[in-house]
Image 1 (tube, rainbow, N blue to C red):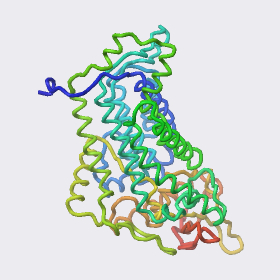
Image 2: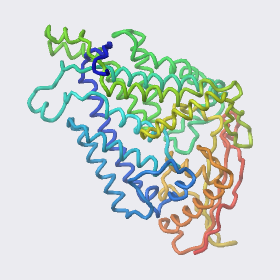
Image 3: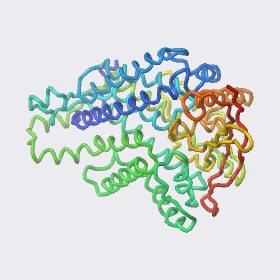
Length: 491
């Protein structure tokens, strides 16, 4: 039945998809290289995370690859294998099993470190999934390049590419529209608050006198980001499409340089290649003439295949799982208070909740973990956690404020610290949250005792302070909790 169903699945140039595939392979190489460098921090029993407790709280994160008490060398070997697979994809190898294996490792890694997964992991998870089902024309393989036979004119069915574009449009539309629910985005304080988050690379905000400028920038993002969903569907050569492309490139470049969110935003920049495939092809045609056979192929239509139907089901589930915020009630978000951490209040109808839950579970079974509410959460999470260490007592007290060399400040460490102050990103009961706080506090203390030279074989105390980020205030950082004892560690 599926083989005989005729649809408008036309033959499309495949080299832009191949170039996209290989560049994602390069990105995957650096992604798994980062995971390899963080093995001692997050992926082993001796690290900061309590994987067994995480699994007991979130049993759906079970996976077959990583396990408690797994030797460090074996964890590193898995990531080294993923790096090798990434290089194979980057080299243009035409293989079915390589992207499947790479995706499998990424899914297991994501579930293993579930407590600290973030937008970087989510986007790599998504794009590695698409590598498994997007057409592969082998246009830029090493063999093709050496032989001088780059497949500039080769065409393959574009049904899956169109569904991929639907996913990209969904990302931009949901991410853009949900920012309109944020009071801080509307009043222009969102970007300054984001710039003050611990993991941000460049702090471009100094004082409230800059708020007008950042409000203009915020409103540009509010207007442009939802419109970026139109890019894949606009006419080739359209001036509006080019403007949106420049806007997308600028936003993602800003996120890379200033916020340090490299993998997700580099991936979105790479996506511009297949989105602007026809414009790029026009440039290529100046040097490679198109024969009549290729022109006729461009207007040929073929039946949908099993991969197209599978991709269609995934896109439907992605829509159900990620677009539900658009149907939340008008009072779904608590305001950002001056001296307390606000939490999200869901007022969805039972039907919307049921659809979202069903779609999330369906995607999870396929290894996907996706949410496209990007930085609209700043109203509820505009805070900074500061960890301090003290050793000795009285006049002999020694304070250590900078743990950067031991635990680098990244989005992962920021998420880890948030659990210590009781701020979570996933549903968890109060009693299990206390268990998690206690366990992670002990893990942090043990890790510091083993890796911080000044704390070796010493008793010490860990304190935390929680600051609200308010760009309108002259101090910016408003104390919510000041120097509260986290753990008194005795060696």
